[in-house]
Length: 226
Image (cartoon, rainbow, N blue to C red):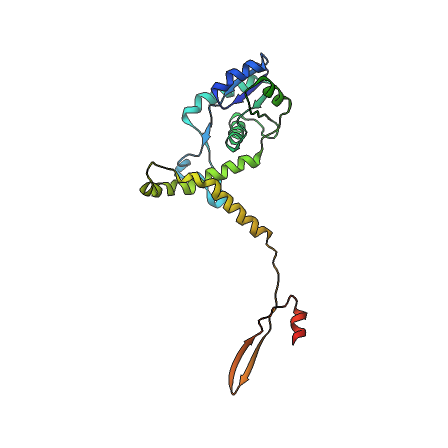
């Protein structure tokens, strides 16, 4: 095994990238995602613990166990591991799942990205490695959790009205955006006080309530009006 192990998503890319990097690099593929949220956790527990910060259980997909075994074997003999999954939320999440399954440290493992399969682009990416962007990982997790909690329940309702078996989960990105924007509005809200002047009058034995329509910024201003 070579000193450097590069893990990409697509098997089709692995061979070409390996030719560009040379004999000091071995390029293997994760064949996409390797883990997912199971339908049920151990003992029938819910895999997403809503009451505990949405702590989520992941398990290796059964059809990827052979791939994971091969990757673990390769990691043991490599001096350096490079995660070269796609540069998007899904790709970043796959890179993070790989560190979890393969026993790598996401804070130190080399993460590289390139936007074209050319020798120059790949060599340039190797010169400028970074680490996993956990904000992108968390964004993908939020979308997936929302899809599982809402989309899975809503989709059967959609199927009754919309032909073609469309998934309600396709709206998770705008839904997350609406939630985030609302939370930002709440966080940015600056509370302020206003003072009003009210009075009670006894008119021929009948109690009458009155309120001045004007509002005052301070208690002093309201008191001064009186």
